[in-house]
Length: 164
Image: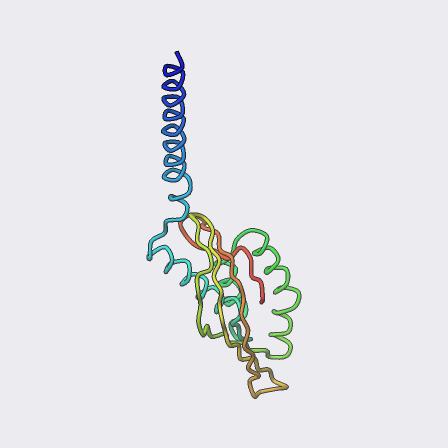
């Protein structure tokens, strides 16, 4: 009787171990692994979108301000697009028109920080040259930003823009 009980415990423990291993493997394959796998093309697309949009967002001239801002807005989504629209209408566009402010941003380097199927974060290092009628000699500033992107209809669009 004692050996029969020992065998049943061994069988039950083996079944429990196999069931646990099967559950863990299933979770790994269906949940974790799918989310963490990315391909080089997806990484490149996110980084390219972030760098292109960052340069567009921070570049404008008095002669082309409306087109520049429209182009930049087309590369954004969500609350950030709303904020950018209000900020540029109230501050950037008037300063550009009234004082002849011209800004040109150049991306120096960028690096992917995070990539998920519908979300990405890219660290962008940039140099911006700003001049105006009062100060025709461009002032050069270097900065870095974390650009958060959301995938909308197959395109990566800026959903947040955080200086670091």
